[in-house]
Length: 113
Length: 118
Image (cartoon, rainbow over all chains, first blue to last red; front, side):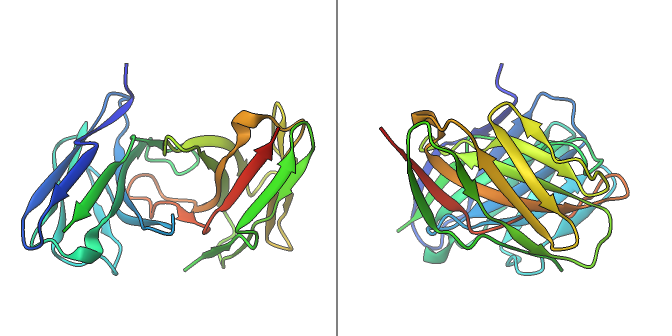
């Protein structure tokens, strides 16, 4: 069984479009994250979220918004896509206590043309 | 805010050799956790090893071990008897101790591309 899954794995879209990436975890974790990996492989936290609070990296444009219908899901919605949004987006989950490992999804490669 | 620095963009060693990847970090936190993640060409992020800052003993996982120097804020990864399957990007990561939920997430270094030559 896949622990953390993301759909789609690849997404090609045009500038100005709105798109969503879905993330689901079946590990019973209470904290989920979104990371962005740019073309130079640099990984940066975008959001962390549990049922208590959402922490947003201040550098993330407000065109990006996480939506969590329940504890097992944290979707990423992106409005008005720009060329610079092209990257690989990783979802991850963990127990809320930071000592525990984060489990990563397979990533979604987003290409904006 | 904390920063993580990996000064070796790429390293190449022969199979069966031992290789050490360096990582330094900067933080004002006293309680935190350090991780090494591996990202093979499949792009899946895989935890290699983790270290709690309050533990003096260096973590070990089979062929992988760390040299954690808290005062120097250094956290290097040693891979013994390297194998072809170890070829990957290796990321050093920092997470401060959270108060349960809403953790700030991992702060990553820029990664080291490790190539194991046959």
